[in-house]
Length: 123
Image (cartoon, rainbow, N blue to C red; front, side, top):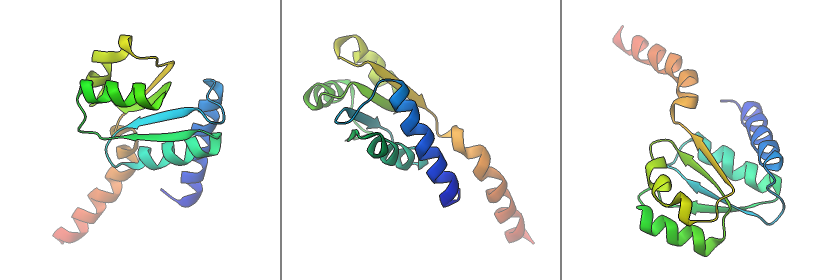
């Protein structure tokens, strides 16, 4: 991903948050591992005027519920593999927006590069 593509992705995410009603000062939780979406979401939240609430990807539902309630986050961005923990508490917390992403969303762009790298090493 080039810096231009990253900037465009950040702008799209910030605009998407605005369409969902996220405004200056709103807290947006990030429940994911270290991945490109974490970077896009972090800067997109900043660009939309929000406050980033990073959550430990190892949290189980009880810890997650506590952190979300304590932070006042009304929007969460979660990796699909971690969504089951959010699903366990979704009805008990005040979330207005749940955005689900997948590591596979960007893998298709990376796979050709990995393939070429491996192929060149085999020669």
